[in-house]
Image 1 (cartoon, rainbow over the protein chains, first blue to last red):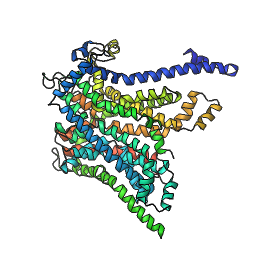
Image 2: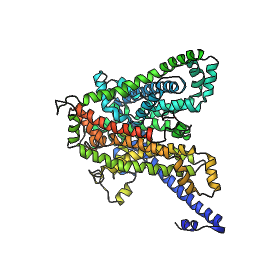
Image 3: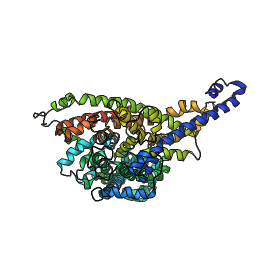
Image 4: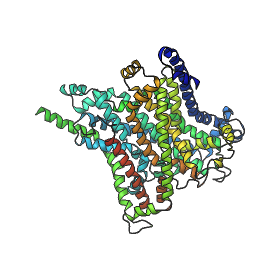
Length: 309
Length: 298
């Protein structure tokens, strides 16, 4: 506080010293704010990692950041497996299958379409681009009820294909790919290839694709992070427990078990708070790993990279 | 001659490459809207005659106005909070380069891994005085029972906190990336002119990333308008019924799956969708965000 008032009137001769002092105290404030925000960001994750190491009783009685035991993770996991003959395994497998299919279909269609918009003589480019942008800005949740109406009409309700196909529609990816192919790769390269007699497909596979590893990484990153945690759409489109993904399964667990609300479900259920926490952790960890592994991609600036000309 | 043949070939190749995405776009972007429009004016359980009356019925539903108010209050807190905090934090982050920058960014994106059902769960635990890591702080505030926090009327704050917690860190990292795109020459020129860090941040960096912040604001608004998971799960599990039909999307969901009124549900969805489409059109044509991308008129 006082350093601020020293720094402000600092003019003339004293300027270097007072600004230096103000700058140092300013740095300290900046660091405190940044660090506090960082701590607040990771507290819940640390808590979530520690929670399944404790019994329900310990979770209640012991300090929040205490560690139970490694054995207890096993006990908690076995309790979780007791739910419906290990349906959690099925949910995890479903999450992996759905997500992998969505990432592959969405990225491949997006890269192809982005390239077509950027480098070929596609008709109605501007209209297609505008529709894509509108679709990209509308949150996917807005289309859930309309999609439900359509999916029921074509008889794909409660079929995993409904979730995979609808989630593979990836306008944001198309836009990113379009910007990438029209700005990051100089058009002279395509021109040169075409002058040399290469067709569009040859140019795409031999020239554009090998230069797009970074693009694929970014597309896969966003596609994965949306697909893995997808809740509302599968919640609405799927009905049978064995078709749930982990996200919907987790929601089902805590609406149906007495863990969070003693009035819910069977009192004898082994699903308590540590088990619920473990299921959430299983949902969060893959995303966290992908985030950390892709941190290099995020440095360059998703939006800036996307629209810088 | 040769040129027109090559451009015809390019047209064919481009169309083939665009086709798979186009199929998805039509099937899951455009057709559902058409189908929902048809459904929305069809006969419904409350209005066998169908037509635009379905829209009027939804608006007249006793649950509509409270849900609308909830969502408006939610947005009024959520959107400004996101814009202010994300701008400030990304500017601060940009001032510290060096080896602590990356670890900080990594910690900021941790909460984004806890979305949807996990976010709801986390906040249940964080706000439950008997379990929370912040239990001392909660006790200091006189909160010893979860139901002192979870009560109707105070829910918007909690849902804002949840949505903010999940989204803010990721956006800070994204906008930090936007700041990285500012040319060093511009910043150097400002420094030579005697601008201090605060002035550079406020007068130079912020205006230069304004369009990214506007874009973020509109995306955040459109997503916030559709708030669903948080109230739905809390209401369906921990505090049964506390946030039933709290948001417009929940009402839409309940119309379809509880009230068996698919026409009404489709009508409400379409109304929300129209707001989002308008927001999208504003971004595309009324901001400079997509300048130079071939969208605007040249």
